[in-house]
Image 1 (cartoon, rainbow over the protein chains, first blue to last red):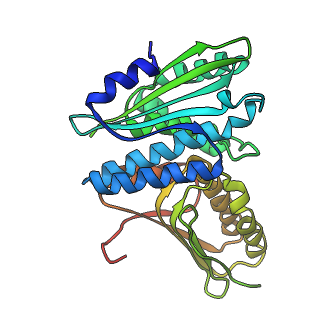
Image 2: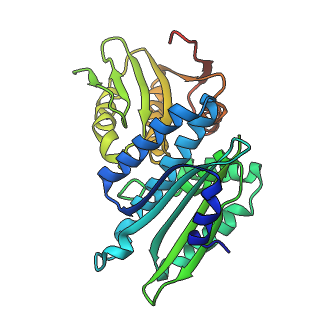
Length: 180
Length: 128
């Protein structure tokens, strides 16, 4: 089980490239992406790894953004997200996000991640291609490919946790490792 | 019919679709939040183009990054061109990727698998 607050302290010894906690809008997402890219440009020498991390970052943040309207605008607290990009000693990266999701979406999201986590590289490839070929695109541009793409590119399973906040919301923690 | 041209932005690619010579190019990065909105005008333009396509059409794809919602739009673009292919017109796609960029190479392979247009995979040279 992953406790983001606990995680935050654990990560202090490691290199925090970028950390953000706050409200998000389309513009802010752009700023975070731009900041992350500038920082990666400065610290990451491998263009390949830089590209991979940035690509996954885009997908993770846009995933949150696309599902944001499921959160009612009743409290600023529920619209606040936590985002962290850290560098590991061995040269890999960790992308960590924490955000609220509607309680009734938890079971579905959990199942989707578990299903994808259970797939082999070959299965991921064929499911991705099948969905790319047939899947529909939601009005906001979600293609149901995001999570598969993240796992395919990172080469690692997603580490996640849901913590019930109240009857309406759960807190969704996600950690994606990108190895060097 | 006018050519379709759009300059690149930090989040959207340069689109250069030349109706006179049938040479199309998508280059840069494609990571808009709403890809459908971004690609809609191009898809509409292609609907017109495939009614009277050139004898030969070449689509060059030189993308640095693209998000998954853009990949759905790329499929849409390729599908439109598949239609032109049925009228015994020649369509070809050139997919460029950085030698080191396995993800972009893999993406090209993904499209190759599901699109019925010959996709040539090419390694990007420095000067390109």
